[in-house]
Image: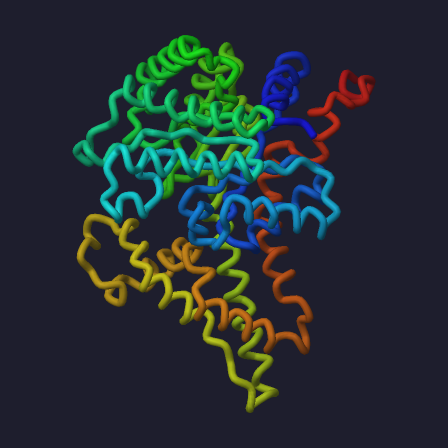
Length: 419
């Protein structure tokens, strides 16, 4: 199977020599249905699939999905077999850095404690067979909330975590892995072009000094206009960032690509990859909401059946999680969940339900919903997975991923490609 380190120069070569533009797609596996849909999409479109799992989602403690890194990789393999998928599937760590796991902040960990937690998680990811590690030490809870981490410190901590990962990889006798560095977040201090360039130069210098140039990152994360509340991708910023990193042999990766208005501009501007996550949580939620309507209609013929209360269970679990509070607008601070505007509550539930799919009450009501629908819908889970898959295939189409494996593997028909 092609490694990510082999794909990146291939993408650069295809663009330079043949003007073939491809952007890799990374699904954030925030539920079992999303993970299954991503493998299904990879199988039927014959394209690679990256799975960008944060430490909140997948970690040694199970994360909010319930998966350790080893269990996560086993789950990917389970769906690989289910769909007879021969496309490359790459488990990846997203945002591996101090305080980027919510519990690090909640438990008031210091720098040394948080870094040690990250190091242990990196080891667990390597042992599980991850293909890519995103090293992201761009948060520092010891600084003022609006103060970016100095670039020199970001470089120092990035190199320290890469050095740990490489030492562990060699100790475990594992093959090389790909790396991703940087962040799109303002608190990282890398959104300014001068800072971005300083970071690259400093990282190159320190990796070389440490004898780690072989671990030079495949992806550099860049600020390309999108965030949780902005869906317009900025082509000019992307082109500038692309031109900056290609001489290093890297490509730009975009985060927060959910619901992007102009996905066709990603490959056109040389973007190497894009992460999408909350959009698929919404697709899963909306599919379940549609099934709840079908259940209501179906149960008119079964007056003794007990209807599920999945949507109520989801809202209750999101409210109890308290994670919704991190998305409150300034004018909403201190407002109780029940007192928020209905449209805001709906958005918070759709966005926040990725954290509570494994809540026992949610699991029980989802099972009841599926059971109630069984007389007319034998496999309700397949219905949900297909809705998520359709949302993913929008990116497969616009990123030119459909049937791209021969190109990436160098097996293209020369007369057709040049013709």
